[in-house]
Length: 628
Image (cartoon, rainbow, N blue to C red):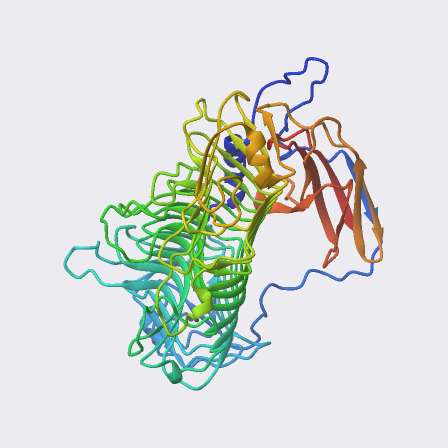
């Protein structure tokens, strides 16, 4: 299985700003890759921490072995008497604590299918591999290659699962999944699904298959309870080459009125999608719908929206939340997200309709065909501390950051959920060339936008002309506040072009939309405490004297203040061989200290790097902390 760490060096190469200081009296070193480099210092502390806990519960019961050299007349209960086929596995009456182990390096043809399968919370049913071969066991099926209906307390790990589907438009082309957990009409509730370290793929990204899917479907919403499934962890998987979506959750009520993508937010609780590598997708990389209190974190998602047929199946983007309440989208890297031949969307991250309390933070989005980060109708959400750069803005999402209110009519979407309210776009690095930098776009939803703010952002415009607008607020949209933003341009003599259609918050000509092609001073009346300065590729000063202490169960990092133009410090916890990435970031701080709360004893590497106000990294420092 490919490792996410292999991509970090490429990511950093695309994001670093090279060059030397314009001020000959003050030169600082650019960031130097720390991957595989020894720590400058090692700090060792005695603690009362225990060993790292398993990421999923272990099964303690019977073990069934399956080998291509087995025999279905065997009972399968030993390595010397394994079963042979997927059909024989499907016939097993599994109970809590059982494990089904496929021999590594073998290929198993056929669809794996179980219904009404249930382990126990601390003793699940596990499907996994065994043996010493380098290759994972390969289950090679068709549509719904591995399918579980009404499952609880199940672990699927360390397998290669491949599905097959005809390309869109070909005879026999149907929708389906590679690995599916599905729940139909029932009044029961289910829990604890663990999907770890698998390779999940299909024969083509032109087909109609999903990769990993959590699905609820019934004629009426009263046919299934809210909180139907709780606690799902999808982690460490490599998901690639399917036509629709890599990792997905969603609900569907076929006999209800309204758009079915606008499902209830309460179908699933506590779904975590963490540390996966998703790529070569026909439409979307990762999207969660019908969820509450969930998370999409530490994923690498790229090369999505590759479909060559303009068939509207899922939309197109890297990562999406839709019909969701309370979700973190954090520490992800996503790039090369395309439009599936439809000429819209193709953003890196999308806060879609019927969403509230979505936190999009510490993500890196770049080189997408559309926007870096965009929204549809949403409430009480955050876009903060992200690095958004060099997206092409070549679809209907034509700004590096684009806020829209697109929505649908549905019984699941209240009248207060069709606009954009209480959205904070703050403390982001926004870099572009010959594109809009920020746009608030009026679409088909409510225009009663309230409480929205654009504050503390660093907007780095590398355009060589002043033809493009920096900021566009469409007619009839009310954008409430611009404050404390910093803008950087190649030439201070360029016009600072802004279109602000906000009613009641105009710079001048009260009551009329305001088009401005002039000095920055006029815009500064609207953007309170803002600043305009010239582009610079000067890095922030180096981090020095990084130290660690252990106090009250926490690792306390401290360092000397870096010189020069320092916006903040980025704190990372990489593996020894890893380059720095938003995937291994812990956070940002403007202070010269950071507190980390370890959960277990072990060896930890920490790296602190400085970053300038224009996103140029200074030389970092790496230390090792050993907790005994």
